Length: 188
Image 1 (cartoon, helix red, strand yellow):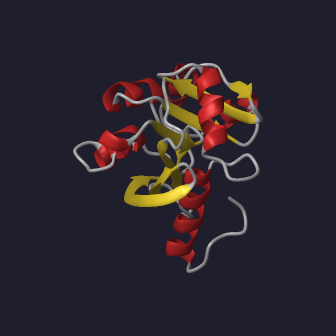
Image 2: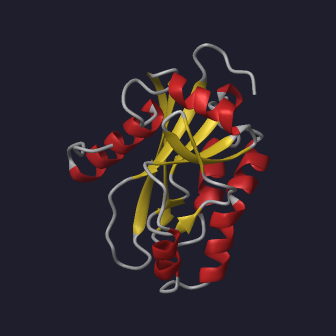
């Protein structure tokens, strides 16, 4: 993966949502060139549903941003609880490296216990495992499909202003919170 000095990256995060089953969950995608805001897409999935991969593809395929993108970032592997993204399918459909960025290593035992309360827990767990190994490089924790982990760590550093949250993900979080609640949240 060869990147320009200022790679164009989209970061997706979910906005605040009701905790009831099947609740509508906003999904925000923010496009940045380096750390500079360039554009936004907005969609929806269902809490603990199965449409996350399809919705991210819908927001990008045929749109103006996809041809410009070098990398697709997700804030974690799922939106709205456990609406899990199929990372290999996403990378194959978009023909771009796709990365699920995490703040820390997940407690997989706790994840498996939580999944048991939902329909089709084995399928959801299989999608999480299919995303590949979890890497910790350059201060970032992530799963990746479509690129080498060392290249991804370099790309994440290029689109991170300060701290360890890439700017497209930070902005997606802030915008999603502001649109849903009327003000941005304190933590991205």
